[in-house]
Length: 69
Image 1 (spheres, rainbow, N blue to C red):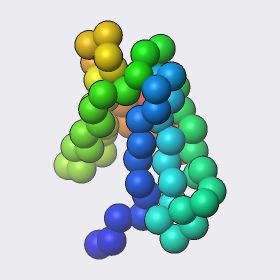
Image 2: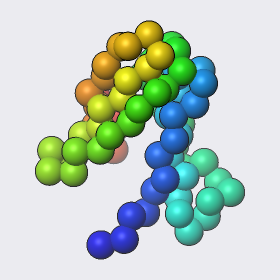
Image 3: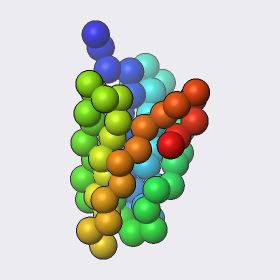
């Protein structure tokens, strides 16, 4: 299976999803942190992401019914 999205963490705590086939468009923009994102890791088996910001806050998140949770 080919990855469909590029996930980037930004300096203001925002996480963006860019569609690989339309890289010039932001597919989704989410905010889970108030500080710069340092690391984002996907856990495909659980369909979750772990993100860590510069303040060392850890957030475990995913999607349910096309909404972040």
